[in-house]
Length: 262
Image (cartoon, rainbow, N blue to C red):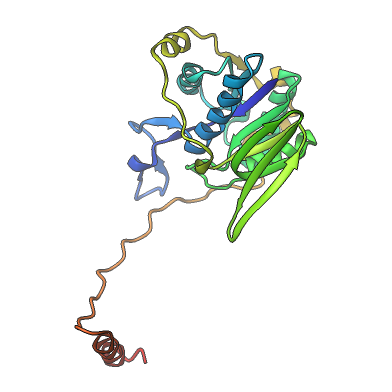
């Protein structure tokens, strides 16, 4: 079985700061990490490989040269190959343009049975790239996968919804996007770290993947982020005193009347 996993290197959002003058993210000195949901996607692919030794797991990402470090971590976790799409022509791509590049990269990889991706990236939270890749490759998709089971030539998944779950059955090839409840990503092993450090990360340009350069990059992106900002901190809350439920309710109503809310 051939599995492709789409991953992304993102800034550690716990340390993100906003430039107050420009409203842009300050990325200098900020740690870059493997996107959380993508780690779950990779783990599911590796679990299949654990039970089916003939499985090949290829990870692919689009980003700057520094993304090689993340791909080395993916190999250290157990992936077999890693591909980096890196080209100035791809810079500034929104989700639509990014999915054009990734779909072209996956076509160049060749035959595949499953494509895993994370539900969304923590630096954008759009949850669009995975589904767009499926549409551009013309294969079925299931998003928000919470449970996964492979039975012969069929795939059984539980898809998380806002008010419940869906149980779905489909056949490969297909695209599945993972959420954190799907599994717990494994740690890198010592042997894996050594393998990742020596891994030959293939770097493909826009020309290498044969993508129409009018469909990638900033100019081809129909959406743009004009400004990023941190929300203003909320004011201190008000505590309503009272020894009983009735007293609490009376004091709450009294306070609302004093402020002319009711």
